[in-house]
Length: 358
Image (cartoon, rainbow, N blue to C red; front, top):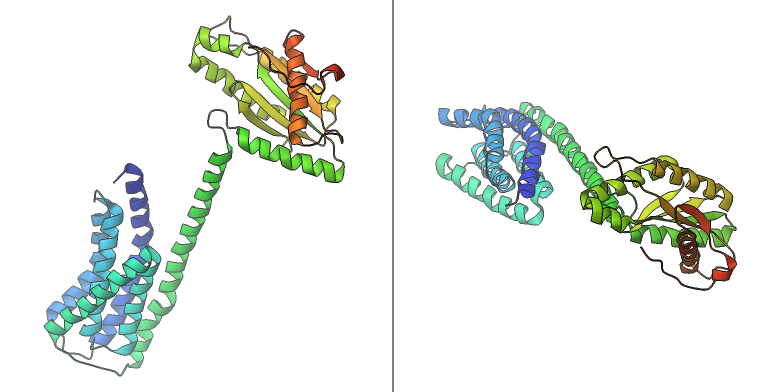
């Protein structure tokens, strides 16, 4: 089993530890009340105390010290089922305590392992019944006293609440895990910004929104000048630091409503919501100036500059691809004009799809 699986098994054992303590303690009350009128041998009373008070701690240590905690805990649940069947036979199938214990153990199996564990648990309960009848005889007591009714009430009321709380915690944990997976699926691992695919999906949504509501929005494409030379001269570790630095500057420079992403390699992208081209230009000029102040104490000669292309939404764009191509042309123009600048695509370049040299 992998380390990750072991971690999940340990988490499972920890979650079930307290409910087992509570369940066994409340089951001890029900079984004690049912055994009092019977002439049970001393070893049955001793076994009841061990099962009710010591077993939860032994089961926990068994699971947490196992190389496969999850499987060990499932074995513990099967043991619980065997003992539930045994106590049903030991109390002469007194209806209330017997059904209470058997149903609560089955509830555990449903929550912990689904149909597979329920089936194994039912077989284990039948085995426990057979064991109890073999050791104590096939007796039946169908009358429950008031004491037995009251002794069963804690398990009927408090234990389902405890199990419900554990289920709620598990659901919350799974929801958080799902959220983290969702974040990973849309986030670039190096920079923490949105990845290429998710950013383009948001661009499509923004385009449709601007079409419907005549909204104002600007997109920016940002390229680190001569980034290949930085990698070749200083190494990819330093190059990654430059990328992380720029992503940090982007996060600090933008509003919560703006969406920044890593478009690919050394290229970044931004969607400015409810922004004019002039406002976006000022924001990108500030970013360019802050990037120019980057310094690395180990490489004092290293400097970075940015070329940035802007494109404001226009009604004549046929789709988000054309909008993006317009920003792409603006970026090309910034590079052709000497780099280290913010630019928009001149009218003469409209309609051309261009690429730029590194």
